Image 1 (cartoon, rainbow, N blue to C red):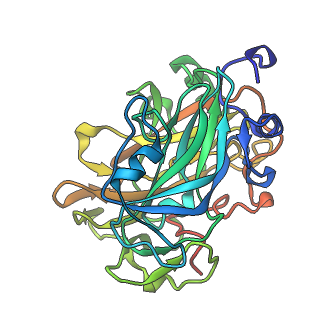
Image 2: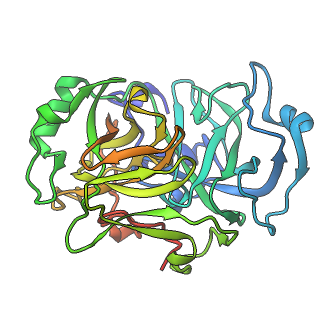
Length: 374
């Protein structure tokens, strides 16, 4: 794929990823793994228990490190241990054109069971980053944080997005889009004033806040992980009883909640978000100076989320995967917790994120658990 074939810089949509597969730029990928602006990656049956986390140095391959830093080769028939560091080869590999680079992120179902995944490639000391023109294998560092996780070959834990240049919107572009498409609305679907939401931090982004009041008739505003040794088979769908893995959190009377250090929580945002079909969005940390907590593992939103084909959907809440690294952290209803970064696509994708394509989270409302639970 050369720049001469693309009219502008940005994220690569579905139809162009199919062309990349046919040209051999994305090797061993299946067309049914393609999403509107991302592609799901599949784990293979080759994996290793590592001594700890790592990144390759310049000129060093992942396999070089495996020779010295692995403990043993794993068998996927056995569950992964909590807090164990594993390195699993992905089925797909890449042979990118010189101008194409990629960024990886966890899938929603991965983040919502507190399974941390980070992409690692040869000759690159950055997680989730694939440099321009990369040719080689893809590896996934996998760390179960809360539960024993049983994986199977071809399970899809993370996703990759491709770019041919800077995709971020300028402040003027984001403001114009925000107003024309009502990117954030309240629970009554009323537009929220842009002055409250546009921030200039790590670029121009939209600020979103935690919901501790709940919406509709539900008194449940979130979930907290249970300290159990239950095995969660990642391939199971609509299978597990939520109460075996999570404790529901009721709406606090005073609008505040203490998050225990080291525990894992599922919450949702107060705002409803919309992602028009010519754009994608990425959730990023709000601000390290507001506290040491993680607000997400899976922070990518495909075109059409909360928007639909032609804007018929007026917004959906975003789900937050929260863990406090400080001492116990007090959250109050409406406290800023994350930011949304919008990206241009080089052209409109040929389909959007929706229930029609089997998306489990397309119509989520409130703190929805992963697809593994009944």
